[in-house]
Amino acid sequence: MNKNAMDTGYASLTELHGGTDRKDQRGLRVEFLDVTKIFRQGDQEITAVKGMTFKIVDREFISIIGPSGCGKSTTLKLISGLDFPVAGTVRVDGQQVSGPSPTVGFMLQKDLLLPWRTILENVTIGLEMRGVGRNERTDKARHLIHKYGLGGFEDSYPRHLSGGMRQRVALARTLAVDPDILLLDEPLSALDFQTKLKMEEELVRILQEEKKTVMLITHDIAEAVSVSDRVLVCSSRPGRIKAEFAMPFSKGHSPEEARSKPEFIEYFNTLWRELEADVKV
Amino acid sequence: MSKSKNGAPKPRTAADQWTILGWQIGIVVVSLAVWEFLVAREIIEEFFFGQPSGVIQYLVENTLNGYLLVHTWVTVYEVILGFVLGTVIGTAAGLALWWSPFLSRVLEPFAVVLNATPKIVVAPILIVWFGIGLMSKVMIAVLICAIVAWLGAFDGVRSTDQDQADMVRAVGGKRRHVFFKIVVPTSLPWIITTMRINIGLALIGVITGEFLSSTQGLGYLVDSTAKLYQMSHTIAALVVIAIVAAIQFYLVEWMESKLLHWSKEAELEFIT
Image (tube, rainbow over all chains, first blue to last red; front, side):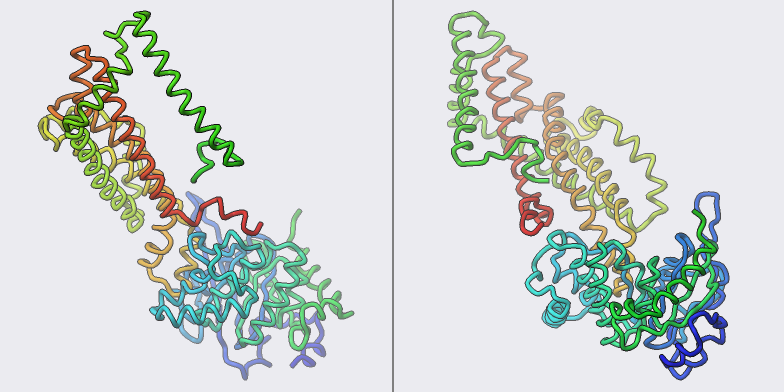
């Protein structure tokens, strides 16, 4: 499949609906069909996304890049069932989204750790609400905390942790309830560059190991190129998908290795040019 | 929230601490001595200013014969009952508004007006309604505390982070989970702050009620002795009120440190 993506070439703009044909043997997880979302702000109506369409297949890692305010975060809210479109259809596993579902988890730039809970209690919150018994949820949370290199911090409060550690706790909290599909809204963008690269590496490894389907929203073109199977480029508001590119690096390469490949820069430049058309300084 | 809020720099060593305590005791002793001396030399008149020895004598005698204890108990009882009932009712009503954004918007201007009005103006009305006994003072404290607690809890509710609420829903929480796991803890600092304000307001409300019309309590004692120009007795009653207020303050402070342990600044040094 990798080979295939390489051969067809980075610059080939795949057709929106036909583009995923070669992956059809894997099940469709997310369908976002002709979706429009309008927000009311006082007397003003703001069209965040208009007629946006894309699909995500099982275990795919897709990224959405685009200028600020192009409705990327709206997309995420619609898939997670926290908000609903005014027109169009959003389906997860063939079911129309009618509210938050255990299948879908999300992570934002803000870690959203609750300052009044310890690290352990922050990780167990989802299990707690699903009625998992105290011993069971504590065991599971301890396991995750150790796995993500936070052993010894179980009883600390979030303010004792650095930004990178806090995001790892947020990841543990998200994965504790075993969602299959993960929506990531610039989860690493608040971190300093070094930490960000390291976390990116870890995140990709963890999500691949856990066989998750991932949608990543990012501003960072290099990040999108190095971690994704596919990158969707979003137009400025009202947002729609204006281009889609297959990326060859995600399988069998760490993001770090991907960045050092000679062809990396070509993919980077293609996305850059595609974005540039929409960015007004 | 805790220690450093009063702005005083923390003493660095035990020796510093003893020096500070020494000065504090010194200030009290010297002021009392000067006061006693001025009255004894008739530079100021005992009739208007009382006399420390008279105050102490009154305090000792009336504590031993139980007279002061009865009045103190009446006031403390009214304050505690009013504070607890008012705070519980007001806080519950404020938190409940989270469930109805519509009602919140309807009630918003009332909250603003109530907040700006001196709550003590209700005292004469409540005395008309509930008589000159304990009940009218309790009701004054209840009403004042309920209004302040309601406004505080309402503010707390409105400061809830929508992203945190979304997070709870995304990991499987229902509306009640959002309420108990996000809205209530978020509002807790506001609730504690209103308790800190309320314990003082309850005492003011009760004592004002006792001033207006009563036959018992520390406010009655202050008012009735002042009208008879028994200054040493009035000042003795003031001293008792100050002691009651101080005990109340430290109780709320202690409660705050228990409830808001996670925001204790002392622990911050641990990592960063």
